Image 1 (cartoon, rainbow, N blue to C red):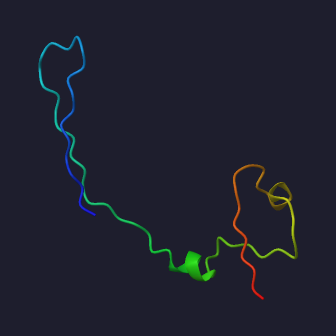
Image 2 (cartoon, rainbow, N blue to C red; image 1 turned 180 degrees about the vertical axis):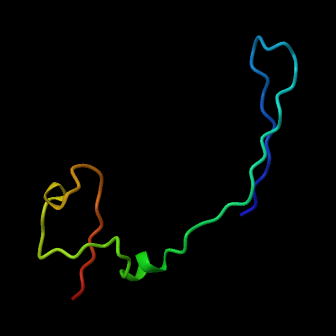
Length: 68
């Protein structure tokens, strides 16, 4: 999408001088095709169900993909 610039508010107690405007440049995003179709090297094949901590991830979350 398009980024918009936004004026900042002057904090209380500030001498009255305006703060500079913040400008945001173009945004980019990664193409998620490999994550969608399951071919990403980030997916690890495991022999069966296991706790994430046993798979080297002591915290966070994991995604499962099953092919039948």
